[in-house]
Image 1 (cartoon, rainbow, N blue to C red):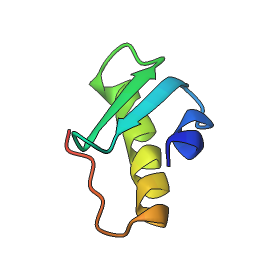
Image 2 (cartoon, one colour):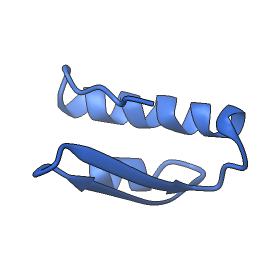
Image 3 (cartoon, rainbow, N blue to C red):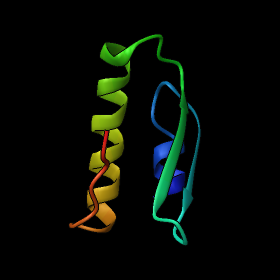
Image 4 (cartoon, one colour):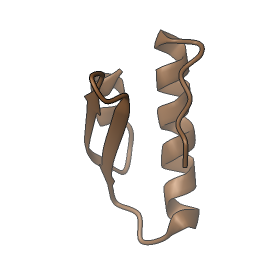
Amino acid sequence: MEAGINELPGVNKATISFMTSKLLIDADAANADELAPILDAAQEVCTSYEKDCRIIR
């Protein structure tokens, strides 16, 4: 999951902590409108590995 998200355009670094169930994304986004497509793409990556995985915004 982490590697797939790291390959997305606009993502500088993604880190997943399965211990805390948290995903941290450092992205090139100046505001929420620019961040939304990155989070949508990250959700697709997560869902491809774990169908019940959800990114809470």
